[in-house]
Image 1 (tube, helix red, strand yellow):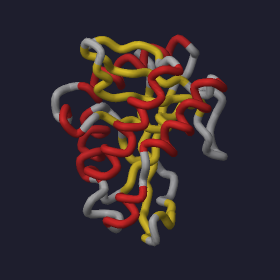
Image 2: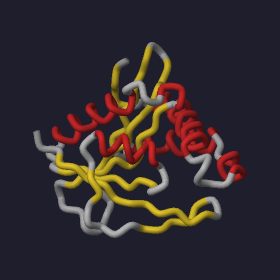
Image 3: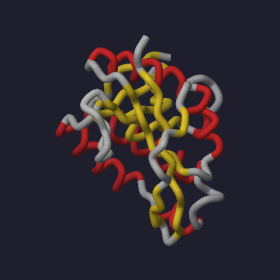
Length: 170
């Protein structure tokens, strides 16, 4: 497995993982009809535009010619963010490779990129009900910080997100 920066031709594979991971990870959180309504075509259009505009830093894990997962990072978007604060905007792996180190490798690569860009801290928002993700991020050194949880409505369901953060200093 190798990690590299995403290229425009990765948009479809990134979208496929995005949709599949949502449909599996959030099956007990969001209604089935909402999850089924997610389409690769709409996500592909989003990621194609994202890559064209070079927003954030999208890195992908590749095995041969197969994309296994991806991580998207950039400056922290929260109003209380300091100049040196980064954010994991999203991190997804194909459910077929969960618990096989893909997410960990992506996070390690992203840390290197963020440090090179002089970021000192990284935060992320995670659904409180997403216990798999919570365990992953805690094992990676993230801790819940003092920012209050926020409530979102998505797919007709109210969900709570909590912010986790970690230091990036070596």
